[in-house]
Length: 516
Image 1 (cartoon, one colour):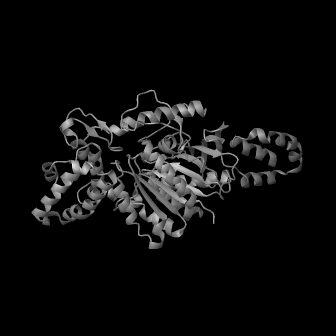
Image 2 (image 1 turned 180 degrees about the vertical axis):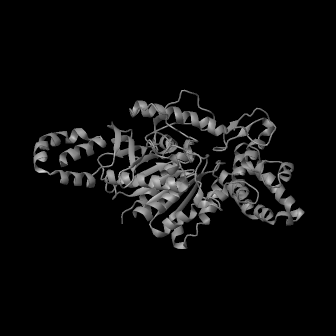
Image 3 (image 1 turned 180 degrees about the horizontal axis):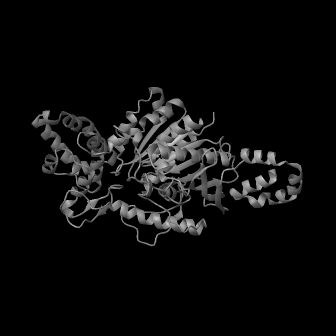
C-alpha cells in the first residue's frame, strides 16, 4: 500500500493536497497488487519525519525577493520510532534559489532556558524591533518593522527553540530531564539539525550555526556532536556575546580570572556614563578599552595573583590606576580587596546619582529602592528589552504567521532547571575542548565571534581569553574572527553596530560558505 503510506507521509509535512490525487487514482491497484507483508516492510523503511507546520508566503520583500516561512514542530523520536519531544522552529526559505548551493543557518539563543526570539526579532529575521539608540525605554505597545539587516538574502534561516522553550515540549510521559543539561541539550539540538536537513533534503547545503550567550556553549558542543555522531561538517559558527568557559565569568573565592576579564567592560561602562577624567573621556572607546585590557592583563593580574605577597606600594599604584579606569573610588576598591563583582559594580558606579546600571547592557540605567546595599535589585537592561521582545513575538506568531497555540510561548523560562552539568563535575563548565576538536577535525570550519563593549553578562575580554586558550594549532587560528562593537549583550539593538555587524557577516559568509 505504498500510495497510502505516501499520503500519510505528506500529510505529516503539510503537503497532503499535492499527493491526494495520486493516492486516490492508485489506491485500488495498490490494494490488489501489494501483499500485506510488503506493505508492512515499506512502512518500516519509508517512515517520514513528523513535521506539522503552517506555511506563510511572502511574495516580495523590501529587498525584492520572495520567500516562504514555515512555522511549526518537528517531532523528535528514537530510531525505533518512540516519540520524545516536539521541537518548535520557524524556517525562512528564499525562493528561486539553488538549495544545494544556498547556505542554511541554524540559530538559537542561550539561557539555558531561552527561546530563539532575540536573534529572530533582533538581528537575523526579516522583521525586527527598533530600540532607541540612547538606551532609553520603549513605550508600549510595541511593533515590528522591516529589517534591512536580515541575513535572509545570504542564507536560509532556521530558528530553533530547544525543548521546554518557545513552544517546544517533551512528549506526554517523557521526562524533561533527558533534554535539560549540557550534553542532553547538545544531543537533542544536534538530532533536530540532522532530522531537519534530512526531511528537507538540505545535506548538500553549506551549514552555519549562530548562537548567542549560552548558545556559545551549545554551538561549541554541537559542532563536535554533529561531527562525531552524524559525520556532519559545518562551514561556519557565529557566536554572539558568547559564554564558552564559565571560569572567566563566575566570581568567587579562589578564582581571580573574572575580575581580570570584567575590568575592561567596567572601564567602557564608566566611559559611557561620563565617570572618568577628561583625558580618558576624550579617547575613542576602542583606545580606552585597549588601555584597560593592558592594565587588566598586566599590573592588575600580577597583584591579584601575588595575593598577600603583593608589595603595598605596588598595590597602591594598581588601586590608583584601577580607580582612574573604572570610576570607582580608591577607598571602595581597597575595601573590596581589589575584587569587585559585576553586581557590586552595577550598584556602585552611579550610587551618588541613585542609579544602577544594566547587566545585559550597561548603557541602561535603573532605580533601586535605595542607594545603600552592595548589589542591584534588578537588571534595568533586561527590564527594557524583555517586554518588547515578548509582546512582538506573540503577536507575530499569531497574526503574521497564523500559528495559534493555547499554551505559553516560553521566551525565557526556569522550567529547564535543574540543568545537568555532570560531565563537568569537579571543574568549571567549559566547552573549549569541544570547539577545538571540531575546528581541528574540520580545518575549513570558520568561527566568527561578535562581542559588545557594554556587555556585563559575557564580557568581550572573557571571550578573547577563551579564544586565546583553545589550544588550536597555529595554522587554524586564522579561521577565527573576533570583532568588538559598541553595544551590550544584544549588540544588534544598537543600529550603528548592527549595520557594521551585517557588513562583516556578509563578507564572512562569502568566505565560510565558498565552494572551491
